[in-house]
Image (cartoon, rainbow, N blue to C red; front, top):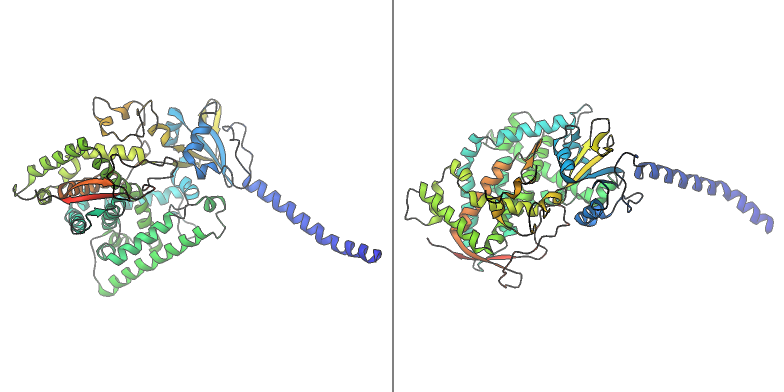
Length: 506
């Protein structure tokens, strides 16, 4: 028996050796793939930078993670990993200027990896364009659609969409509306009008399906998807499914247009006329929705919550609306919401400064999380104080580093539109102190449209209703709900809130 046992051990030893070698090889690969050494001249690594995953705090409580390590780093800059990706976190005035001004920090390259829900701008061909070339393609297409001529043509339709949505709220017998649903959907509809297809904007079922698939793509930006990008995770599968459904939806619309021979004056027709392929069209629509909906859709609702709890600014905005409407109304005795119908494009864009600063401070508070770039220069980028961003490393900057700086914005979590009035001008205290509309090499392409739709929605809502803010139990709220500063982007309140509306007849 002892001999047999010895023979058994001998015969299994090759298997043990093979398993051991496999384990060692796996550890070696994972070590070099997911735990790369940080160069000595890069900012120091954080203490909780784990193998495989990197710094989990970056995903779980991002603002707390950022401020904790920023305040303990000698220069305010530090390094960590997100899966296999080396990230350099920048802070302070110099870090912010470098982040937004450097031509060596790629925008599209940064988001393609570290913001998993952002559309990948690449061709199906083996010799496709660089991210910069693809970004220029996106920029050219969007800039054409946001021309003054297109805004002027679309204005009556945009106003009609807002009026229709307002009437739905007016006719709701409950007198309640959740602005993060009703007003968010108005922004979604207007965005589809400008960067999508008429068939989607005009069909409630298609509109709802498009929103559902878009939100599925948005929610695919998980930590696991970034740490293990090739793993077929549930988020990746949902993203693939949503993208495929959008593809088939738009393809069907194109086929119907081709069969009937009809042409539309919309973004889809423009892209088709340019010869863009179907996958590029989907990429453009989803990319435009990311640019125009995530912040605008949420902020239009937050502005209404802030106004509901601020009698002073509600009064200022309503008087501004009344004054502007009276300047252009053909029937001065019509209800205010109908007087608004005669306001021209130039007035919508330039004659609502109070609404503008209300939106401005809502964006400052709600523009959360971090922005990303990638060092595409092939060489180390000096940060200062002897530190660098290594080649192919990523750079990140937390917007709250300046937006929540009490030295720039006293009591930074308080919504206070007066911050931007000439006598205070808090956003002028430092270079790039306000990032809400982009700065330097990265201005917001859709700023003009975002302000236009904000002005129209706010004006019609304030003209149509008196309102107050209620919690989910129906109690009147004296203040808007707090913001969760550890979220990664503008978001709805943790608990639903509602506007209790009373129709205005004058």
